[in-house]
Image 1: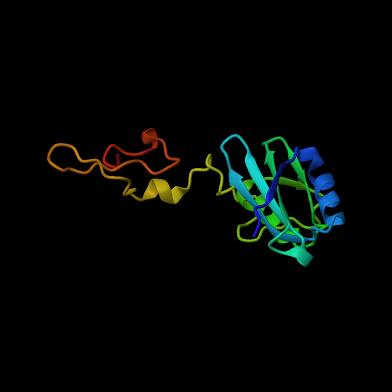
Image 2: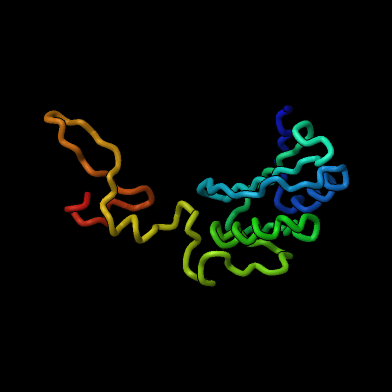
Amino acid sequence: MSADEVRDVAVPDWLTVATDLVADGLGYLDVLAGVDRGDAVEVVARLVDPERAGQRSVRLVTRVGDGDALPSLTALLPAAGWHERELAEMFGVQVVGHPGLRPLLRRQHAGRPPLRRSTVLAARVGRPWPGATEASGGGSRRRQAPPGVAVSWLDEDDA
């Protein structure tokens, strides 16, 4: 099994590069996913040649900033439809040209996308976060703030 070829693609070239790869025989969309990198969402698509699976695949990587819009791959690869809906709903990525970006799990316009680091989830503030332990002297434990929750948001009893 060979490693994927990785191509960094600019957002405006996303559809063009994918179209060229499909024309070259990589017509199977294995995965399309997002990763929050803080300043942008990194979108990764893995295209595979179905005739030579395990031998020929390309991973496309692009960074979608808050003001950017990602061209949809659904006309080219219909399997991208569900994945692009997830990108829009969970990461807030604007996908242009998708036939129906209705929500999968959440109500429409239900607030900030839950998989963005900048989104503070109410459950994180409402419950004490076990956090990591820090041994200090007598072996006492100190609770840490949950990830994504500023210490100033917590009561003094929670910190």
